[in-house]
Amino acid sequence: MKKVYLFALLALGLSTNAISQIDIDPIPVLPDPCIDSVDLEFYALPVGGMPCSYWFFQDILPTHDSLGVYYLNIEWDFGDGNTYIETNTAATYHSFDGPGTYTVCATIWSTNGEECCKTRYCKDVVVTGACDPCIHLDNFDFSVTGTGPFLVEHTGTISNVNNFGYLVENGNGGILSQSLPFTFTYFEDGSYAFSITIFYFNPQTGACCSRKVTKRVNYKEGKSAEITDEGDVGVEEQTISSDNVSLFPNPGNGQFTLQSTNGLTIQSATVYSVTGEILHTENDLDNLNQVEMSLDHLAPGVYYVLVNEKDENNRAFKQLVIE
Image 1 (cartoon, rainbow, N blue to C red):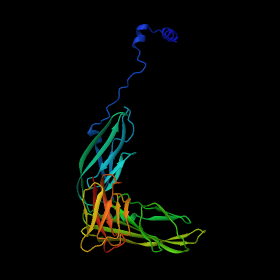
Image 2 (cartoon, rainbow, N blue to C red):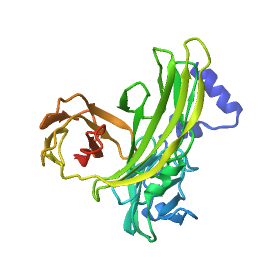
Image 3 (spheres, helix red, strand yellow):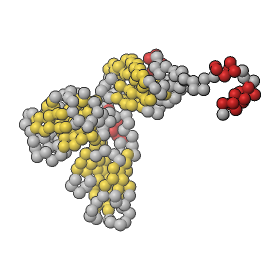
Image 4 (cartoon, one colour):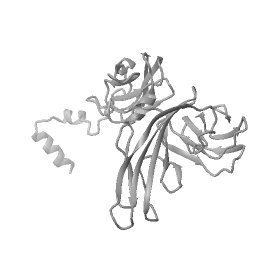
């Protein structure tokens, strides 16, 4: 076999000296996985007609480059307690809740296949004007489709609202916290007023506003349901105190205690992400004065707790930080 290989090389005009110089398993030279922070320069472009709302554009797209470096994702920190991870585009949208100077940071993880590197770039973004996140709730609407089970989905947009949640009333006496989309069914024929209330809250200022949208669902088993718009009550603004409950230790490592103050009793507690996703619930607490919450399953970050969401007179909001 070696003679055949040598003969083939000689036939190609290679000398025996050249044979000794051939590396049949070369070690590849990998590119530097790190990038200069200057390359992470981004641009903040105000959105016309939307006070305090900005598009953030980044020059680097999370993908391979021509040199063999792979950009895994871009993590945005908007300097107001809200973050967002972008995995397939270099642009994102954010609406600030109030005017001010925010230190906005873009962090990117990159790799050459063997080594990883984390690069961070920050700059101040000055936000001016009358910021009112409540006006964005007017864009919310939903659809109900099917014959039972029904599918409930967004038809409006709320991508420019931070720290929001939902209360769902199914029209037969039930009320619950629910993320969209979801499915539900009725077990008896009837005409039901199905409502969703979207609410915005700011635990730091105690500001809260909501919009309630209702659909009339005429249900009869085995037949197509008649679904009509019932209207909405518009945006209502109110102030919700965060002093009705105390939360400790905060920050904490996943074990927290909710304790009532000012005579408030705790009926329920729901933990939301900063984008409104329901992550943990404590229901039917029989008006306790103290509730122990185990949130070890949540990653480190900022979350929000809505206490007594079904009780408009005794609701409370708290910010929660897991380290």
